[in-house]
Image (cartoon, rainbow, N blue to C red; front, side, top):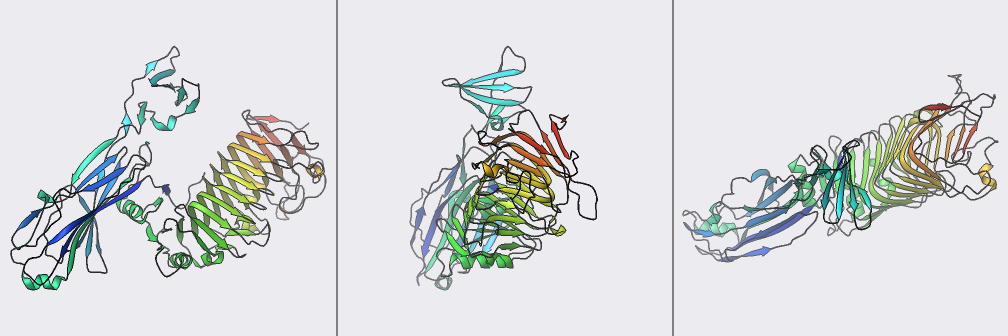
Amino acid sequence: MATSKKSIATKASAVALAAALLIGLGSYSYLTGKTQNIENEFNTNNNSVELEETTGNKYDIVPGTSQDKDPTVTATYTLDSYVFLEVNDATGGLVDYDIVDGWKLLDTISNSDGSTTYVYYQLLENSGIKEINWYNSSDSTIKLYDEGSYTYIWDTNSNTITQLDTTNNDQIDVTSSFDLSTGNMYNHNETTTILQVLQGDKVSYSSSITNEQMEAAGDDISLTFQAYIIQAQLSGTTGDSLDDPLTAYKVVTTGASVYVDNATYVSLDASSSTNLGTQLKNAINNASSSETTVVVLPENSNISMSGYSFSSAINSTIVIDLNENELSLTGSIAVNLTNGDDLTIANGTLERSEMSGAAYSAFSIASNSSFTLDNVTATTNGCLCYPQGDAAEVNIVNSNVSGNGYVVATNAATVDNYNVEINIENSILNASYCPVLINVPGTLNISNSTITGGSQALVVRAGTASVNDTTLATTLGEDDFWTSYDSSNWGNGNAVAMAVITIGNRNGTYAGDAQVTLDNVKLQYDTTISGSKGIYMTGGVTYPATNSTPNKAILYYDSDSSIGKLVRANGTDGSDYTVVYKDGTLIPNE
């Protein structure tokens, strides 16, 4: 799969604690007050943080004295993690303190109430690796390791590790949980680190403080501490980490569920008098063209808004972090991504209703623009996305998408729609017609997915498609419909020969060969129906007037693929314009 214009990673964990020193001021030369400790603990992915104090709750500002105060951060983690410490200073300069060495100043924030927040951080390192002693089996390429009811089998020839449950013989590929250079296991060592906050566990008061200074400070002053933790290592593999602590801090404090390097994070406010739909629109309209803007929806805050509100973002890279909420876009007008717009919708539910028909697109992606769904459950009563320009890009990753007519489809009406890129990975796609259709020169990549259509699962009328480790299926069950376009002219869209995969072109000016490569792909359909087929191929139509070369339908597949019945139709002049290779060997047409 081609690299998207952004790098997005799902947040590993984020937890926050707070403690506060609250000091009340009056008109006297010394005052009394008390601390308030607020503690919340969240355990996610073996990351947790606690903030505690043991030094009591009364603080008297007496010039020239000091008092014990010992806020302490306790972090528990299995992989490298950032711990952040916020010190919100609203003491008016009356309270002196020093932060313990080891905390690095990350940011200084001037607040509207006149206080200042100092942000510190530490990177706590823990490889999370458990050293394992393997023993050799009778096969020199196999190593074994036993742990409880599990036996781990390391095939050093294929460099894969399988977990065998010895109680029921279930086997799971767990290669990603190991460092293959050593065979050691990730994510098993838990570490707890205690971090002091204040030098000497004290606060102090200058001997030069005057009554006038305390009166000027106001009635309430405070010194507030808050701690956060976020997993810096996204997985056990080397180099897969959150390298930018400032961005990691933005993620954990906004409650975001995605991480984008050097992005601007905008949190929508559920308590604001401005509704969330308007806030989202404003955030998109104000997005910078020079850096990514991540818009974070607050928890338990679903949004409903008109879809065309998005079209005003120009040359911007925007990530909408649904944060496990639902975004419902109404209205029949497509969301138009133009002029280099790059929109990602991540981590939640998307509903795109009120489309004008099954062939109308919810998202239209023009030249040099891109649209990405990442970990989204999406439904639409039309076609979800329509890439329609040179270098237009669609990415559907870790998502479950249902469309009425299509999920993603192209249009060959003009050469301006050519050279698109479509990437589908680890996803489930369903459509009442055909989930995926490409009919222009371009690239389609599908991996580790399940795609089911009411007619075809995949149509490649032109372009190059690569499909691996995927199941494609059609639910078509009508006997006559299976053969309705086998020998008659094809129409537009999915009005072509019926099969799980249809490759090539029978008629019309669709410029380009149609090439499909299948690697470990399973085709599913009702084989008992007369005329049903796994793959239909045809070619031989001459390109537009600028090129007199007839187009070809080309198929490469391997022995791990189950394709069912293959139909190869000749071109209109009787020549063989269908080309098939199995495991690299040319298969002549019968």
